Length: 337
Image 1 (cartoon, rainbow, N blue to C red):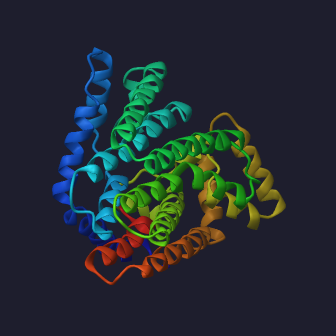
Image 2: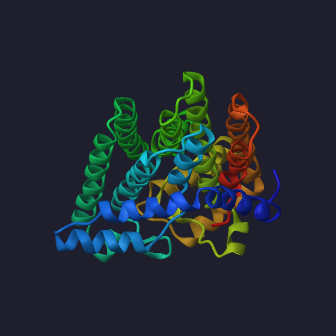
Image 3: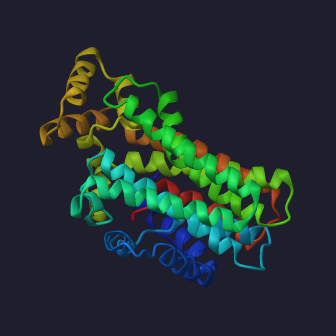
C-alpha cells in the first residue's frame, strides 16, 4: 500500500466527486438538520448551534444521497430527511463518545463537554437521537424504522464492548472487528441501505449496498485508527497519538502486541494499564510500530475490505454514480482531512 502522500490527490478527488454530484441535495440536508435542532430551551439551542458550527464531512449523509441516486430515486424529499437522520445519529454518538473518552478537541474546537459539562453533553446527545426517531416516524416506512432503530442499538452495544476491553493490549483482532463493526460500520451500512430502500430495487441490490457500506465503514475505521500512529500524518497538520493517550486499544496496538517479544509485551501492558501515558511512552510505542512495519500491515488489512466494498457494486450497471461510490473506497483508506 502506498504512502498517504502518494494517495493524497486521488483520495480527496473521490470525496469531492460524491459531494459535488449531490450538492443541491446536501444543502437541503443541512437546512433540515438545522431546523430539526431548533429548541425553545436556551442551553439546548446554544449547544446544538455550537455543534453545527464545527462542521464535518457529512460522509454518512452523502452515502445515503449517493446510494439513493444510484438506485434511481428522483422524486420527493425522503432522501433528504433520512440523510439528515443518519447524520444526526452520528452526531449524537460523537457527543457521547467525547464524554466517555474525556475528549477535549474535535474538528479543531473544544468539545461540548469541555465548553459546558458532561451531563449537558449526554442529554443533548439524547435530544439528537430523539429527533432522529421523530424523523424515522415521519418517513412512515417500517423497514427504515427497523433498520435505523436497530443500528442505534448496535452502536450503543459497540461502545459498551469497547469499554469492557479498554486497556487490553492482548485483545483479539476478532474482538476489535466486532467493536468497530458495531460502532462505525453499522451506521455506514444503514446509510447506504436506506438509499436503496427509498427506491424500487431488488432485495439483492439493497443487500449489495448494505454490504458496500459495512465494508467501507470497516476500512474507514481501520484507516482512522492507523492514522493515529502514522508519522506521515504530521505532514498534513494532524495531531497523532490521540487514541494512544486515551488508552484505546486499536488495530495497530493489537498487531504490534502479536509481533512483539516478551519484554516488549510486558512494557506495552504496563503502558496501557497506567491511568495516563506520556510522550516517552508514545515514542517507545511508535518505534516498535515502525520496527515491525505495523502501518503497512494495517493498510493491507484495510485493503481487503476495500476490495469487498468495490466488488459488491458490480450488481449495478456501470454508470457515473457507481464509479463515484467505487472511488470513495480510496478516500476511506487514506484521507488527509
